[in-house]
Length: 169
Image (cartoon, rainbow, N blue to C red; front, side, top):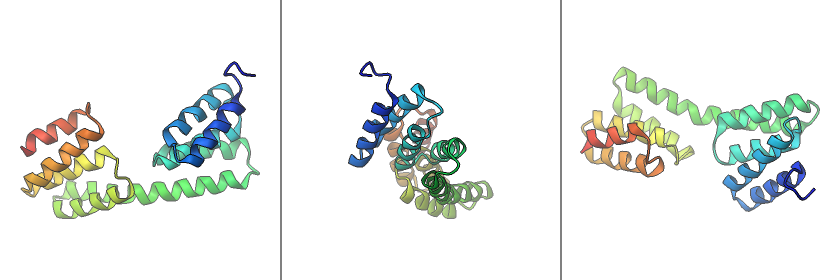
């Protein structure tokens, strides 16, 4: 069907976008395929892979989990789930440890851990903003301002980014 209601067309275009590295476009088309056919594992697997490539690990784990329920014998879905879970753990582990360090007042350790998390996901405005707060607690206001400005460039409407900027100026 060429009326936009053929999930295979959306899924195949998503695969093409994935191959080209156009991950937001791939996610858009995969979402459309899933809207048309929510119980079709292949469409969901494309959605999961797009989330994974965009470093949206929670979403990738969720979608791969659904894929493995829809098609339990498909090893590639199980492998995708394991990969997404490993990436999720690797990404969130330093962030969680950094948050704990902040709560304990170990701001220097928090900066190091937030920096580690950012190496894995440089576009996460929350982590950049939290590192800004850690820099500010250390009296490193130039670095705090730099991170707050970066967080705002990633998420201009995020209120916490603005509060971090004001506190570091």
